[in-house]
Image (cartoon, rainbow, N blue to C red; front, side, top):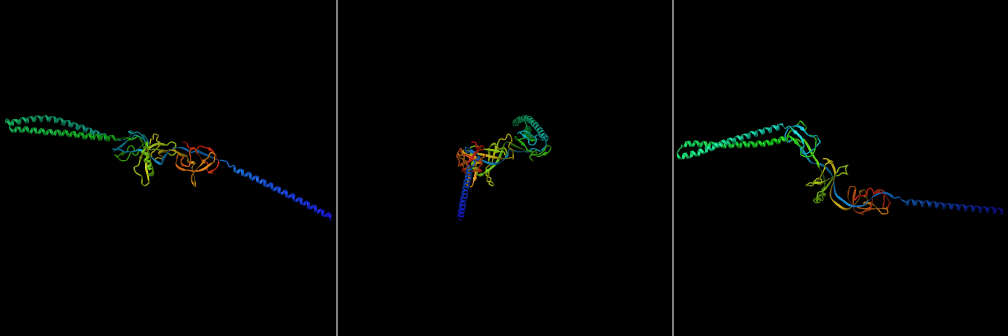
Length: 419
């Protein structure tokens, strides 16, 4: 019995020792797992804090002089358009140009059959010669009759004295008196004949001038330097005087471009045009790098009440014929120059719920969102009226990945504004 009790006591001691050892091992394993888990969590937090910098492009805020401009769509029109018409009728026997040819002022364009008009000129010249001969003959007759009249007048005076003295009879005196009066009438008739011949000569000379003018109209010359259009009447056709145009000639050097602007800008246009001629540019689509320079030549005398606009025209030198009648161009009219304004590339300006803003890059390469007040935009640049300072640097590309305080890496300054 004593032996049995001693055995039970040893077993209990063994079991207690085994249980304590297992609990100690379990506790140590839990501590190790907690330490490892803490280490992994700590390592993950460090990786989150090391956010990489955002690559962006940037540009400086520049202070410079910018133009105040008005922009519109313009339509090119010829400086002069001449509808050439025949001033005499007849057969069109010769065309001296090809359609679309450039011609100079005075170049021959058409010839109308001149033979009928040449015959008229010859006939009138013959009439003048006849009238001149008649006038000379009348003058010779007048000279002869004048001599006879002078002799008759002397006889009349002499017989008048003899009648008073009773030497001759009154019948003899009356015969000489009648002869003298007849010669006076003849002189008057001779003078009338001379006057009639002279008037006929003057009339024929006037008719000759008109006939020569009609003959000259048979040869049609270009009235201006320009480009001919389509031939509207072809060689061999009969044409009437002052009927339909035979061709249209457009003067395209210089050339005009007409455009309209809102009436609200009329006050500025009048104010700045009073200080000098306004400059204007015509930009051909696709040729933006080669604008045409010109000046304002016309401001309409009234505002179009249906559209609320006023029409203007600019005149341009066009020796290379880049501008063409009927062509549409972008017109930029410069009113004046505004000095010392701040500009940034238009790509730097962003729009948010609170309005417009830009991302400004600080010296530590972090960004801040800066609200700005915008002015005009032109040629890819925007005027900043309030919110920025000269030489500050703004983000021009890469804004979608930015938040205030983000770190950036400037990749390029390719869009930097040039002063």
